[in-house]
Image (cartoon, rainbow, N blue to C red; front, side, top):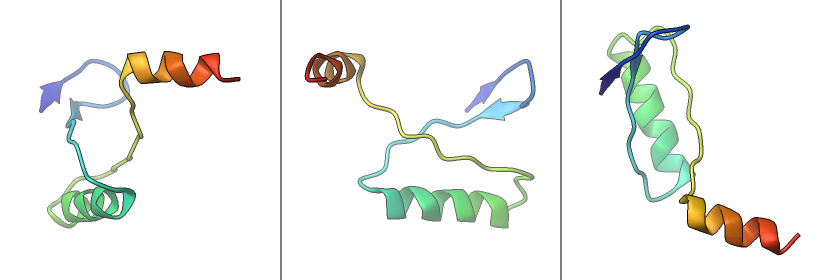
Length: 55
């Protein structure tokens, strides 16, 4: 949980085994009072570079 400056006040970073579990976490957050929740997919930078080299 991070306090940040800008458009959002807080940022939570978590890992999930798949997109459905990530969606559940987002829904639970909203159920407990989060005004807005977004899910962003992240991959390790090294893997990102490997994928970009395949293009």
